[in-house]
Length: 75
Image (cartoon, rainbow, N blue to C red; front, side, top):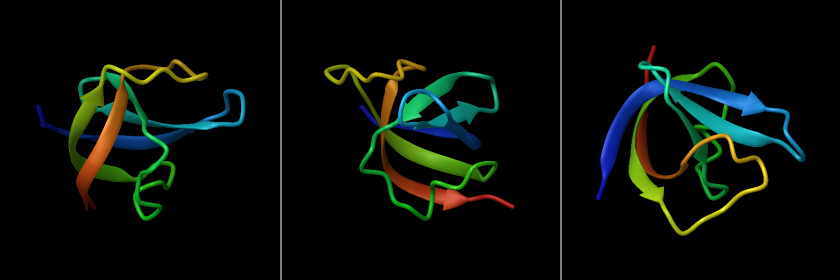
């Protein structure tokens, strides 16, 4: 099931580093490694559509893993 969220991209210095998406409501998702590099800029606001991957575990463990399928950058 696809979800659409609005929030901010953050770089977390855990292990080798991880990208997080923090929603406007304060929920943190870990962005799956295959995300578009144009999205991955710390502090950038975006509206993303993707799927939460229940079958993926990560070293960072900062939140559910989000496979971003599309995004729109926000001002």
